Image 1: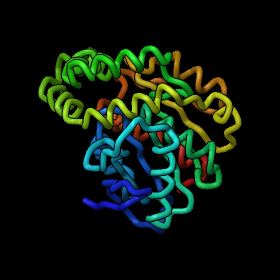
Image 2 (image 1 turned 90 degrees about the vertical axis):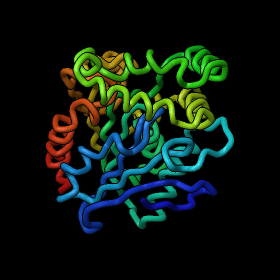
Image 3 (image 1 turned 180 degrees about the vertical axis):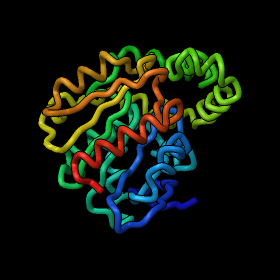
Length: 264
């Protein structure tokens, strides 16, 4: 476990591989921590410098007072890269992690070598949806919405056959700091990268689980439609979290994407 004070916030991060190789940084989703990337990271660490981190309000990172703006998460990532002396990185993010990746590319495009955007979009959901979720959590805690979240996160097959894992990810979700979760909900509610992502000029790959109930394929395709030359891959038998349900498929897509763009 490693920790760094970034913008007055202690961030928990991990780093593996050689810093002489191209760097890939992984940004996790709402209500999870960086453990969701461990299998993917293990499949890439021999050839890449791999960085994992818990965004503010999640995992072992600090949970400062909210609400947050997406720019807070973006500047945390930028500060972490500065702390680790990484000038340029491939950023792979899932859900809000994909929005953080888009945000970094918007404000500091020279720091981004390529983007892998999983189950995310330039804008996610109407504001009233997030307001209703925040209200529900304030009334009943994260446990009050956990069952619905698990249905949106995971494919029917996973929920039927991986009962122990499903309970473990439910625990991860419910143990997320409530303040960190609702503050990041506010950040997602207020974020819109429609204009900046349409101007991206770095290689971009988008993926989406075919059974994603949180950011369904048609939403991710809408992101693909505005990004010049972006590719799209539909991941079968998968919900909102490809690094959990289909880590090998995701790793293989990442490798092919990176090799096709000479990031080796």
